[in-house]
Structures are given as C-alpha cells and as structure tokens.
Image (cartoon, rainbow, N blue to C red; front, side):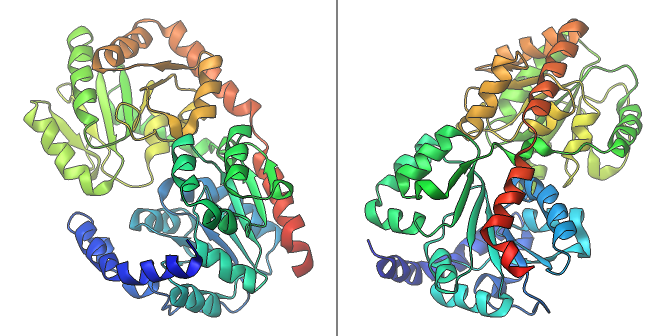
Length: 425
C-alpha cells in the first residue's frame, strides 16, 4: 500500500471522523468543541518557530511535563507548542502548564490538514511522545526538513504484529523518523523490525522514571488523608477500565468484611464514565463520597470516587496501597511509576503488556504483586494491611526501582540537541 492509497482511504473515511466525535461527545461534551483544529484550521499563530510536542492524551501529556520544562529553560527563544488528541489530554496540559505553552488539537493525518498545520505553526522540530505513527505527517515534515523524534517510544509485540502486516508501506513510514528514543531493547528491536533505521535508534529507558515528587504534594496528601479518616486503611484502584470496577468492588467487599475500617479510593480512567461508576457503586450498596462534592468521609463511607482530573498523584500520596487499573481486563495496564515513586506497594493484574519492562523490574525487585482475579486482589491488599513491614518493604522496593532508572530525560535532551536544536541556536 502506498501513501497515496492510505490518503485516499482517509479521505473516504473522513465523514466518519465527525460521527466519531459526535458519538464520543455523548458522554464527553468537550468532543463537540474545536473541530476546525482537527482539520488544520487554527486561530493561533506563533510569533516564532515553536518546538512541537505531541502528547496524545493524559498519560503522554503527564510524561512530557518534565521535558517541556527543560526545553523552556534551555531554548527560551523558541516557544513550545503542545498538541493532543483527546480533551482529557488538552485539559491536563492546561491545568499543568497553563499559559507557559501553546496548545491546539493535532490535525488528522489528512494531507490538507497536515499541510495547513505546518504552514500555520512552522515548527522547527516534531517530538512525538510514545508511539504515534502518522504517515502523512512524517512525510510532510521530511519534505520541509523538520526533524521528527519519537520520544519515550515503546512498541508491544501485539502492536508490532499488526503493523508488520502493512509491509513495505510501514517500512517507508518508519524510515522517515530521524531519531527514536526507545524505552527498552525489546521496543527498539520491534521498531527496527518495522523499518526504523538502526543508526537512528537509541535506547534510553523511560522518561517517566524522571517523575518529580514536589514537597507540596505530601503536605496536600496529609490534609486529604485527614478528610478520608485518620487511622483508616486506604487502598486506591487507579485508572480502572470498563468491566474492571466489578472485580475491584468484589475485592473490596472481601477486604471490608475482614477489615471494616478499609476505604477504597476508586479512580476510573475516563471522565465520561464517572457517573456510571458511581451508579455501579451505589447499586452494590456501598456508601459513596465523590471528590466533586468537596466533602470529607465519615466512618460509614466505603468508597471515595476520584471524579476529577489531574489529581491522581495526590490520591496516590494519600493512600497505603495501589492497584493499577487496566490490568484485570485485557487493556495492557496504565503507568505504575507515579505510585512507585511515592513508595507504594503495587498490585497489578495479568494484563500489563503496555509496561512489560517496568512490570518486570518491579517484579524482580519484589515491589509488585500480580493477581488474576478479585479474590487474589483482596488477599494481596489484606496482606499489606495486616503486615506493615511487608507494606513498607514493597513500597521502598518500588521507590528504589524508580531511583535506579532515572536519567532518560537527560539522554533525550541530548538527542534533541544533537538532532536539530544546535543549528537553531
């Protein structure tokens, strides 16, 4: 398949993009907004050529924060332009960075939309977080001599198998990437197998290990902990996916029966599901307090629903044990590094292919417990509640994994400098 055929297919499917946005907007009204940007029409026009960073959603935006701060310090003459794909990613950028950066939605990978975007923004380089592969974007960047860097890149075996079916087309797309900063040897091997030129591949680890825990977070967590209940045993189920809350609630019923003071902090992955998860909890007979109600828990509160954006690190910091969602359903799991950096013992399900190497490191360091169902989840949580020494040791082991793997951010900054920033100084 050539890029022309790919583009023709996208043009034919483009009316469905509107249908998709309307469908998503049923639960997340923000999907109805700023459609023009997705097709390359922007009111924003930078006064100077920006450094363009694309972070598709919340996780990628969070991972990019430290990088963005460093780039602003090192290259103050160039503004930073952030693009996202989801409204939650957009909200995270605004909450975290405010007016310090420019932000728009990324254009769809349609040739006319990409061309309008590049004409309007004129970036000096494109830094794509994680692994977003856009054939037309990469092509037009190459035509304009705009370096493309795939940062914090990862590629699961499942995704690689799918991309390999595209054969030479994918090899041509991947050969246009100027620099790939891969998280692991396995990620690098899969990406090279798809067409990344070996000389352009660098294995630097994950920049997510360079997470910064501000002192103010611990102070805020102490206040929140008092609202939850002094002396209560608290575990968090973070970034849970559809179909996973049922497992978590079954486990909580077991935990509460054995330890009546236990409080579950439940944080669904997607904000459009907050209401349905709250209804599920109440139908199961649990007493619920929602973060959005801005009130504390009493002794009868069973579940604290984290129905807010950008506060997951705070919820982690105020908890005793962390279950990482997306792992008891086949979703590949969410990033456990924030919880590890805060010294929490971690529990995950068997589906963690999105962070295979990080999961391996945590397991090898006895920092994580892998469970397969609600009964094992409950047993693992109770083990940590009943054995403070075990809880402390696993938490310290998790923190140690993070500390030993810091440094990827500095390596990435050097690659960025070597790739294209020197000539723009």
